[in-house]
Length: 320
Image 1: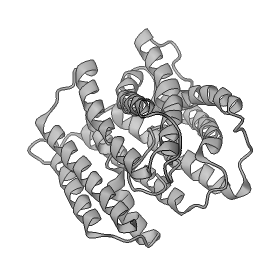
Image 2: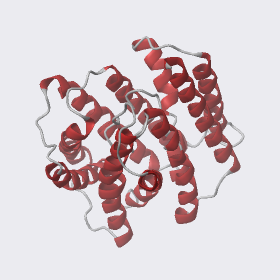
Image 3: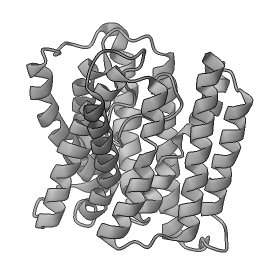
Image 4: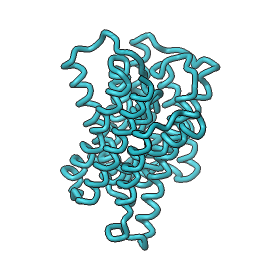
């Protein structure tokens, strides 16, 4: 998000959400429904992508998902009369979000899914705020209140637990590669978030989202063609439905829903509410993919999310 270190978008969304004071908008029941939709939709996104990468190479999987998102967002932007050409001042942020978040983050996460369980992928992906906080302190000169330091320490303890030699095989090259991809993805998302916090927006994230997805789709199509050749389009029904779900629901509709939340609620409330996403993802990966709820993974995720929550509250308190 622009004002908090907690990411407030999906693996395929724009990397930022509209923040600011509460506005008159959806009813409380509508807000609850939007929160429920977003956390379930995003929790299921990487579970569904795990199904997709069994039949589609990683870069093509993200490229196809991006084109589906463009197809959904284009009429939404048109109906809402929000279609604009990106202002020149916003071109850098369009590039950064599209390339760092929608492209690099999504591809690295998807590549990691080939070797890592969906549940572990979701948890590692949500370590992003742990890297945003020190980067914002270093590059943006943001304050580092003690609550944020404590939160980072707790979150890093959870991350280290995931790589405890007693439960993680450091001799497994595939495991090392997959986990490395996912942590690199979190760093790419962090870079996108830090940049968007420094950027002075002219248009709204909603107005720019279509261009960000479109640029990502074009770039990823060229990269996929060069690195992976022609895509496999002879998909099984589960893989095809999972791909359609990722592009339409997990990416495009998820972005629209979180944008609506960001326009109706304080950024802190949205950030904390979306911390339910990894927990839902863990549960769904266990139910749908048969991945066991490993005690170490559960404890690690709780430590990471607790640290993020403490750091987020600390950030809000320091600005009060």
